[in-house]
Image 1: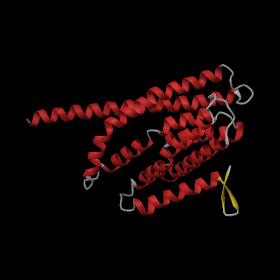
Image 2: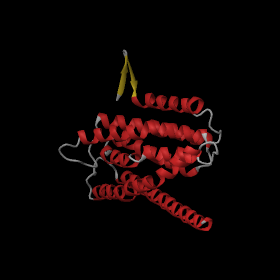
Image 3: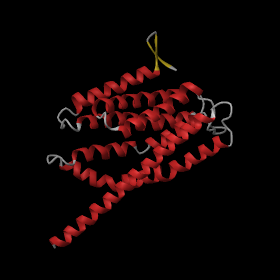
Image 4: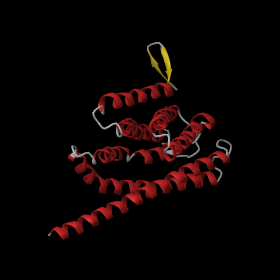
Length: 255
């Protein structure tokens, strides 16, 4: 699909990529120019994530539900609107991948995550042109926590700065509800949706449109991502309770 600008038709993917790249540069050079150099790249990454996450949830929801009024299928042919959302997300992940390669080349975990995610999106979009309902359903669950997570991440990046007391307050305020929200989405809803998707493909509902090797590859990527997410939030809960326990112990000693 493409967007018409005047009499010129511009493909979605390069247009979205240019948009995210411009947002990143504005964030790095203007919005966060007074932040410490070591956290400016992370903050800029958060800003493009904000411009991707919540819009992606609404766009993907509209694309999936508008085409699934009669019967939802994990292996149905992609619609034009679904392909547009895939292009939108591919552009974001390409931009963020470039960010990690430039600023954090040793962060193998995130670079690997982005490459694996791009493999899923690109094969769904260009190789088989089927399965967008499944992939966008997972995207909705992955990005519905995005706004809260980015606010939390920005606060976490600034809380060590003595001049930013607000960041400490925001971090402490956001942590428990964000952890709870993330736990429900990534620890309960995500695995349930993922299980239904894999069961559908295992029954052969995608035969003839999505090769076995491909849906198994998708399952490995998504299953690994869900597992890592659960481990990540589990460690954050442990850290939170450890901090609260230490703080209570300190308060008792002061009294």
